[in-house]
Image (cartoon, rainbow, N blue to C red; front, side):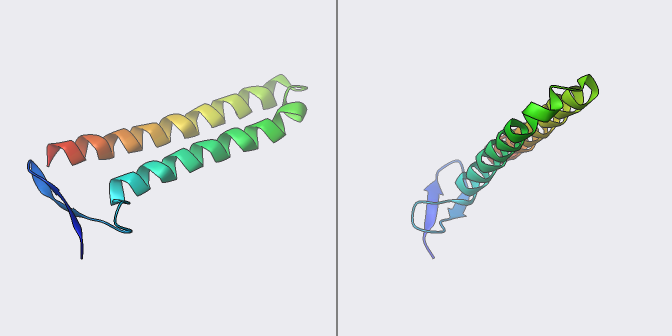
Length: 82
C-alpha cells in the first residue's frame, strides 16, 4: 500500500494515490456544510413567516456548521500533534 511520508509524523495510507484520510474527512465536512446550507435555503421561505421557526432554523444551521468545524479542527490539531 502507498503511504504519504512526513518526516515529523507516521506515514498515512493513501486511498487513491492522492486522497489521504485527512483530506477525505475535510471533504466530508465541506459536503455536510453545503447540505446544511441547502436545506436551510429551501426552508427559509416558510420559516421567515414565523419568528420562532426562523430562530430555530438559523440556530440549528449555525450549531450544525459550528459543530462540524469543531470536529474538523480537533482532527487537525490531533494530526499535527502526532
